[in-house]
Amino acid sequence: MRPTTITKLNTGAQLSHSVFAQARDWIECARSVAVLTGAGISAESGIPTFRGPGGLWNNYRPEDLATPQAFARDPKLVWEWYDMRRQRVAAAQPNAGHRALAKLESHAPNFTLITQNVDGLHRAAGNRNIIELHGNLWLLRCVSCGRQEENRCVPLSPLPPQCTCGGLMRPGVVWFGEALPADAIRLAVLAAEKCDVFLVCGTSAVVYPAASLPERAIAAGAHVIEVNLEKTPFSQFAHISLRGKCGELLPRIIRVPPFPEPVI
Ligand code: OAD
Image (cartoon, rainbow, N blue to C red; front, side):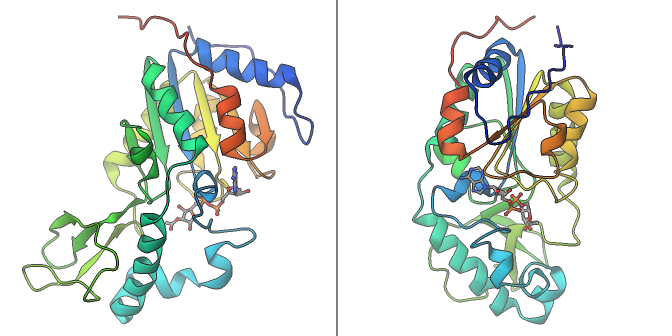
């Protein structure tokens, strides 16, 4: 049965023992868990976030590098930026936060990991039921024939890469002004609306439609737990909002098993 008690346990700076116990309890008792992750979960793997100190958008303008117009204008420049990011990710390893979520998937009766990240580190950590809302850095797609391929070469050469049809290959990610893959957002909404517990990890919760998923989970009756270094626009709505690093806090609230038997 879906939990109905909504306990306001926003913690601010104070991380009391009972808040962790409550979060663990909700997770352990859940029949269905969904997770939304953002750049913050990969920060401890050495991958820069987009906003905040050291964030990519402090040094680069999205309109120069992450729009279809930017690619049409200067595909080489756009590819150089993505190639730099691919090189950084290629040298990175999943961290304790990624590993905690992989452990959770291996024990939870129903588990969906929804990520805005394009780095592939959740799969590297062992998660399998992953919805990549913003695509993946390792995918290339032809702008002429639509052919898609996985390519893990770093550095990529020559830039921009070409398709066998002669068209230009673009990064297989979602750019500003583009729609999210229809199946990805449909399945993400379904997971948010049917879960008992929804974890929101390392996202500034400002980019829609991803940012609407925790709101949908709350509206559908789930317990929502946020883990973030800082307060976000969503923090005030989370049932529990924990301040700190994903790599430190997720292993503290994900202590599995036991989980209930799945209902057939
Ligand atoms: P942001 O860079 O907007 O936010 C990262 C969040 O992670 C911030 O709220 C930080 O406080 C938090 N954070 C940083 N380090 C952390 C850590 N070790 N543990 C916990 N939290 C930490 O990244 P996203 O929310 O993922 O879209 O950004 C969403 C989208 O905006 C991205 O997918 C990208 C970007 O523009 C596209 O490129 C389409």
